[in-house]
Amino acid sequence: MRPTGGLGDWAAGWLSRAALALSVLTAVVVAVLFPVYQGVTESSDGTSTEVTRTLIESMGLAASLVTLVPAVLLALPLVVSRRLATGFRFGAALALTAFCVLGALTIGLFFVPVLGLAWAAVLAPGVVMTGPSGRRPWRIVAGILVALPVVLISFYIFFGTFGAAVGSAAVMVAAIVVAVAVGAGRGWACPITAAGGLVLLATAVISGGMLMLGVWWVGGLWLDIGLAATLVHRATRTGRTQTASAPGDPRA
Image 1: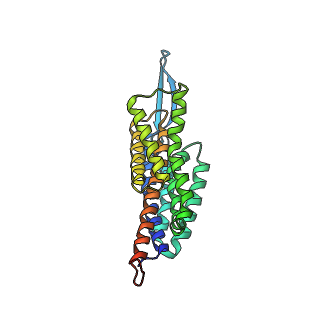
Image 2: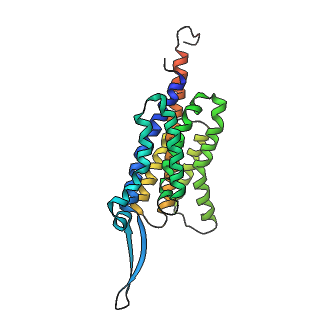
Image 3: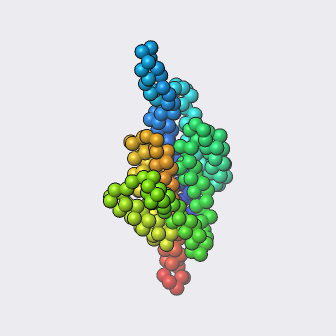
């Protein structure tokens, strides 16, 4: 029988792998796809032209490799022994926090979703080992965070900042339903939240534009919460199953 602590480490390991994968994706988006430089050039005849350049176009390949620093940090807990992995996960999360703060005016903000997964990997073992009452506050906070972007968008729509089509309203209602389910601890809502996050991340990359970073953040938030909740839910359910089937247990 795998102990609960081992199940927590299992969840943390998969969250670390997800953080590594998302950091590589983010590095590609930031270096190759997102325009970090925007300016206006004026020709000799007075014609103005808007110019945008990506990071790799502006600074070259060597300078763009800085976007892979988070991936290097997040890879370390996956290559050390299990005994050292917990400390390395915590150190990677701290270092990535500093990276996001110091690079907030340039590329750091794009790695906020990666940072969320890194800290989720740190916290997951402790959450798995707590009882149902101890996990309830985490579920409630997760549900509130999933609903928060929808509530804010509804606020802007109400005051006329944005318009909303019928299809968009239906999606927002569905998101609120899923958020309530996440807060109530319904396991089916967790992978749906993660899938919605992936869709928003893809939308941010494809659509671009001024709202790209905001959509990227919301997608990352939903992916982080959905994936972490899915893994924690599976780990705790597996732990209960193993306990119930243990030899000598009257419930077996």
